Length: 201
Image (cartoon, helix red, strand yellow):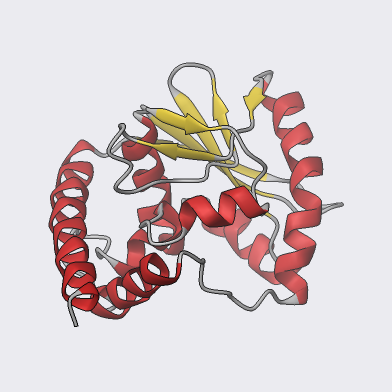
């Protein structure tokens, strides 16, 4: 694993992510069953455009998203208190020096783990508590982060002030990770070809 030590959401972080598939978007490459996603082509075209411009595509940041960002440090401190673990914050992780794809974990935990922290709206948080499982929407991101960072488990945490936090430890799904890895290799090869075609137009 290669770690880029920079501040998440900072200029260096955005520049490093431009044109590089990231775990938060792996659901645009594969489904939860490890099959190609219907969103793959559009995501590939977005990344190809980012490589040509050298700039990360701007995404709308809602008030709820901004609130989540502001609460993340508070949630991380509570996670450390509840689990007696120390969270290492990093900017960006790559599986190797090729840097073909990446993840931006909310924290690495010890030698084998990591964490993904969400601070959603109250109704969403309550739903997570009642369901008691990893939300399907984050399946590819969590397992993708384990693949990229070479980890065995990942703690998903949902936090809302004043309500019991939801923490669930997700063990690495080797079968899914193999399928994800195969699709990522294929996707990245096609992305390189697409960028090459655009540069020769």
